[in-house]
Length: 152
Image (cartoon, rainbow, N blue to C red; front, side, top):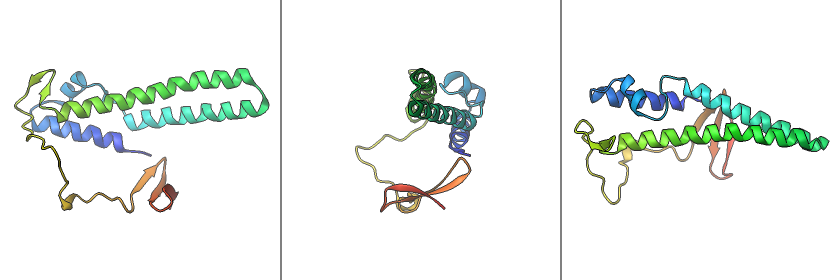
């Protein structure tokens, strides 16, 4: 199961508590509801979208255009849910990274100014060569030469 969204929640809650904000304040002021299991919400919407696209493909093979069209219309709902889900996360991350909340400067943020160019220090090595991600219970490794994910 993907667990990135719980990690985002924990990071935002830790940020908030270090600055005297409660998790409730984040839930009130931010777009995404971090009290929910967003990993499960994401997985559910992805599975529903995938299942509807499977139904569409099978209906097209059978020439059942009504079922195919209905599956596409319903699939749009889950695609829209996913789009909104990522938009909310992007907006919340931008809010935390900004120097203001709700349009007002907030001294609790205490961010240093951003330079024109920035290079991450070597101690924060990004795992470009061999990134391992767990997706829906299976481990995947990015194969850079083939430009694809492979099961391990």
